Image 1 (cartoon, rainbow, N blue to C red):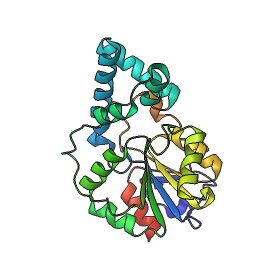
Image 2: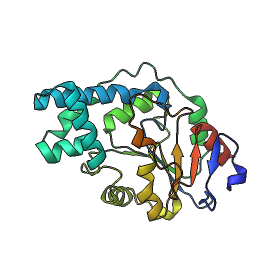
Image 3: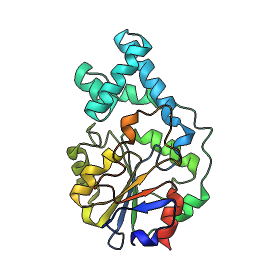
Length: 241
C-alpha cells in the first residue's frame, strides 16, 4: 500500500511503511476505535479531576492542573499518582471508568472492516480491561480482538514509555516489523515506529476537542507517523480490499 493508494481523508508520509508484511494489528481504545466526538474522555477526565481533588483535599482547579502535569510527565495521571502519592491503582481505575456509554452505538462498518484484516487484532490501552470490554461491547466489536492489553497487564507502565511497549510485545509474541499500530496520540507512536511498527494516527475530522490539551495534537507531521486518517473504518476497508 502506498500513499497514492489511499483516498482522502487519509494521507501518508513520503516513504511511509506499508502493510504487506503486517500480521498483527494493534489498536488503542479511547478516541481511536470510536470517534473522539463522543467525548467519553471528557467524562474520564472529570472523574480523574474529582478523584484527585478528594484525595489531596485541593480545589478542582488545582486537581485539574495536577492531573494534566502528571499525565504529561508520566504518561498517565495514574502513574503520576502512584509515584507521587502511592495510591491504590485499582480503586482509581474503578472510579474513573464509571462513565456513561449511552452515546456509543454498534459500528457494523468498522466490525466488517476489522473482519477483513488478515492476521491477529489486539487492543492496547492505558485504561482498564473492564473499560475496554464495556466499550467494545457497546460498539459490537468484542468478538473481533484476540486479546486486550491494559494498564494492569503492563504492570502500570504506560504508553508512551519504551518499557511499556516492550512488555506488550513480549506478552503477545508480536514481531514489531510485522505489526501496525493505530493511535489517536502521535506521541504514542514514536517508540512503536522506532521498534519497526507501521504507525497510523487516527484524528477527529475537527481537532478541537474541548477536553484535550493542545499538546496532545502535536506530532501529526512527525517522521514517526507513517499514515494519518480521519476515518478508521474507511482506512481499514482500503487495506482489507
